[in-house]
Image (cartoon, rainbow, N blue to C red; front, top):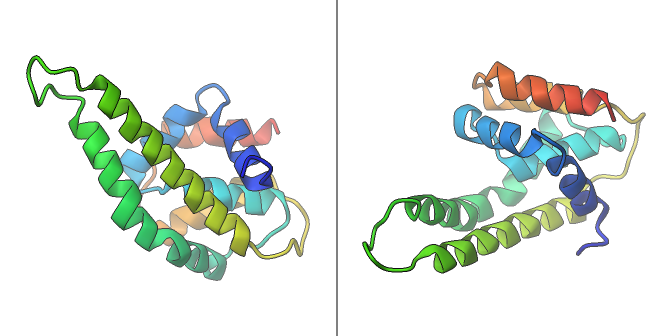
Length: 156
């Protein structure tokens, strides 16, 4: 899995300063699925289509997994931020759930990578993917996180 170019790209981009926070803000405030967002940016940067049809196909591929696995894991992890069992050491369990959530997102990226269309056009910066995905969601995205992501894509 670590040899997958999409996983490599996603880890590199997500690891840049400010990108993780921007992606999570887009997730929480703009309805973004972060693995799908990273996939779409990768598609644009590698000359793959990011039009409405491509977005719908990719979303359909991972939506059941996101809804039945990733989202429940995230909800459990977030709920555990509160002290639900006073006096009990729950942090280690929360970290295992966090690791399971990351593994689930990695599997979503693997499924997207496996079904990715072949490159058929010039490589873009990734910003077209942002515009197409925002239009697909029909939800406003917060400006600050969007600007962070756009700036990072502009610098390579």
